[in-house]
Image 1 (cartoon, protein in one colour):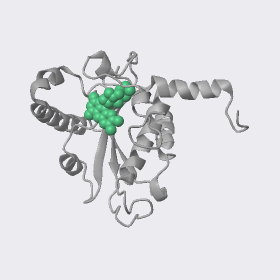
Image 2 (cartoon, helix red, strand yellow):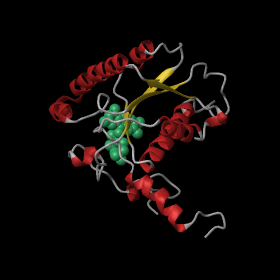
Image 3 (spheres, helix red, strand yellow):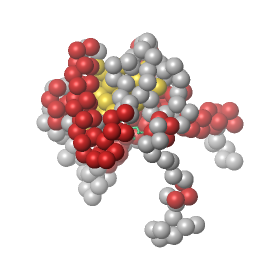
Image 4 (cartoon, rainbow, N blue to C red):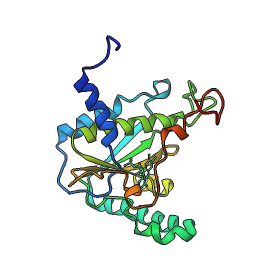
Length: 216
Ligand SMILES: Cc1cc2nc3c(=O)[nH]c(=O)nc-3n(C[C@H](O)[C@H](O)[C@H](O)COP(=O)(O)O)c2cc1C
């Protein structure tokens, strides 16, 4: 055991939050206290980022009417996604894919504009800005779970339409509509598993040694 390891209880808490984090679509209304929201956003903001670029921007949606228009964009894309899914269309339309109207808080997570000058770590992999934003969202997600709040990541929307709705500058890009707030209970398993939409696959299928496809 490293001298720098946390206590057993602290380690257990970290793994518990990782194991019990769920993507939530059912919310119980309520509110998130401002200090708590501040803590969660501070956790997001401590994420690693390529070249310390900190490309994340968060827009808190406090206007009910604007929340409704965001939900409208998601609904439009939900229908288009169902059409694109062909034979699974009906099953998809039965899934709940967002909790925008019931959650306490809606946050839109976006990539900042003017990202081109940030070359460190992005010359061959420009998408590392997106990876950095995803790290921030994951921090927020885990911290929310530890605080007893659910979070749902919604990516069903036309980014250009959402960017226009929120007055984003050219080059900025919305990546996630985040639904955050109290829930009655956390799903025991990913909801897509519970609903028989998808199955989880084991780590052993994703782990290779030395060469792609070679199992340890
Ligand atoms: C990048 C990303 C985008 C996602 N977009 C959506 C979405 O639009 N709607 C939705 O219901 N779930 C969305 N999810 C949630 C996934 O469906 C969920 O993470 C997955 O089924 C595993 O469940 P779990 O997060 O509870 O472990 C998204 C997750 C990620 C990481």
